[in-house]
Length: 223
Ligand code: ADP
Ligand code: MG
Image (tube, rainbow, N blue to C red):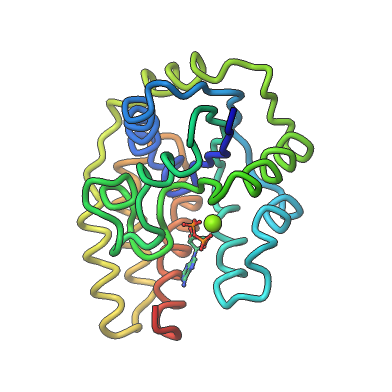
């Protein structure tokens, strides 16, 4: 049976309500999927590099390594018929602006590639990625992920998600001038504090920095 690797990125894990909502909506959209293993982990740099090796050399690669290490990620494996394509459909297009407003990236992504989650893009790559995470992160597929993910949803679903539109607006404002970066970073950090109950301000400031970092890439590309 086909398997795929799902990783909630730091923008979704630190915003705990977003992580819970994303899991809940994935379970609802893919009710037949089996969940195998569940892991919350700070990604070590060697794993980040291997996981994103296909993007090595691209202009966004250094940013991507930085972003995935801003905070813990949550990893699980979904198993089911045609699950690779179906999970990517639920997630939506890579860039938040291009993702359908009904998709998870369209609903909860912040900007550009700050896009909530990673999902394998084809079955052969899914197999490689799953093997990598089993080896390097001790993702244990013999563990039933369903109970752990339901517990996560129950714990965090009530956490407010109130800042998405405001943070998106701040990013648009920043992109008009690319000046006063520190001020924009503080504004985003302040908004994140409301949504991220168990992270320190300094950690949230790192996430805000990565969000603006994605905008900085945009300035130099024709995405
Ligand atoms: P996906 O995650 O949809 O499979 P890719 O594999 O093409 O997308 O890219 C991996 C991740 O790198 C994206 O999810 C996004 O976070 C980031 N990314 C890709 N392209 C860009 C870009 N042009 N600018 C900024 N970030 C990007
Ligand atoms: Mg990809």
